[in-house]
Image 1 (tube, rainbow, N blue to C red):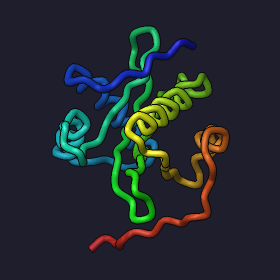
Image 2 (cartoon, rainbow, N blue to C red):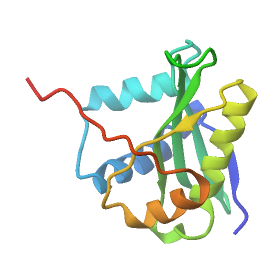
Image 3 (cartoon, rainbow, N blue to C red):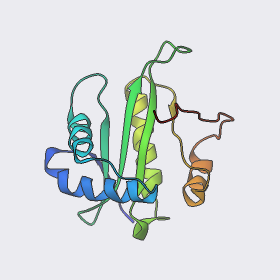
Length: 149
């Protein structure tokens, strides 16, 4: 299936929100309305700490998204790239949408001089992990986070 990967634009607010809502639902979570607004604004922002967003489009219809950001790393001189969110509509999975989005993030990282791209996923996300095993390297790191106050 031919896929066009392009940056988010202000006109994409409605389709982005639909895709990101579906992504959040997959992980059984929601966010407040203020987070939708701030995240979309950050995806379109031009501050160094802002995210970047991509849409995957087939036949004129957005079917996937990726959010990524660059940040400093204590073990490198160069910035690294964190692929925070990756989503493809269930009806297009297995058709190269996720791979195309990841490869576009790789290209953005290369263009920015960030040789490292990393991401996290849930251990139960078996279908995505089949793709990730082909386009990335599984690391031995285990994630911890601060408990909710």
